[in-house]
Length: 342
Image (cartoon, rainbow, N blue to C red; front, side, top):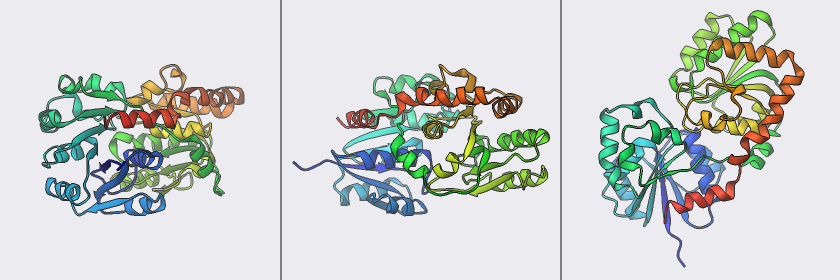
């Protein structure tokens, strides 16, 4: 029997959280023919490494989606995040469209041009997948999608993460930030946390993995605080896991967060993740609130405690496997993804 064809559509052309999830869906798929479609860019390199079928487009617009679907006999569109969902909904595609929302971004909490447009086109979606319950609870358009909404927490292939973490990396760090250098991820507060830690230990070593529009701002802050010897900025890494594996603590001070994939990946390597508890992070750490910090001072204080108290640090490490248990069953997660297409 001929397999149905699924087109995963993304607005971005680089690799980050949502892109990672799409790659995991495609890599573990055995029931459908799946294609990755986005504006051409650096993502092509990553997809080539992963041997994923890629359909590049010049620009994400309805006519391009219509053309790609027609040329490739697409049966189902799986659109990721708001922009891709909206464009696909108005593309004249006649088959099923799945809208998959990966982040609990602030604009969903009030009526604006984005939420109005999404609400209008939502009738076109066969299902709406959400990575955390908080997204539907806090969105102004929840009544429009509640009957088709499906909560599907993201998943992490721990075996794969551990395998990738074994690649050689010589530098060791005390604290680490990993994510896009953009406002929702709050990279500036990470630099301020390191600044405070250095006051009591001038040998503190930190690393920031990621790139984004706050790159220059981060570099200026590091220079302004005289932290160039303490903080390494290593940019985007296709494999961040060997660096995470060489770090004591991971810090996620996000202002907004969809699921919190980085937290699960880091805890696969037994790295405690101190975090803000927003969005999906609140769900992940609902029974382990000792990992959540609400202010810069709380992050600084807890870092110092864990660095000085080996017993407490081991307790945090030992809690990691327990916390991630619901989020590492790839087979069960893949079945939930398939259920969206039925």
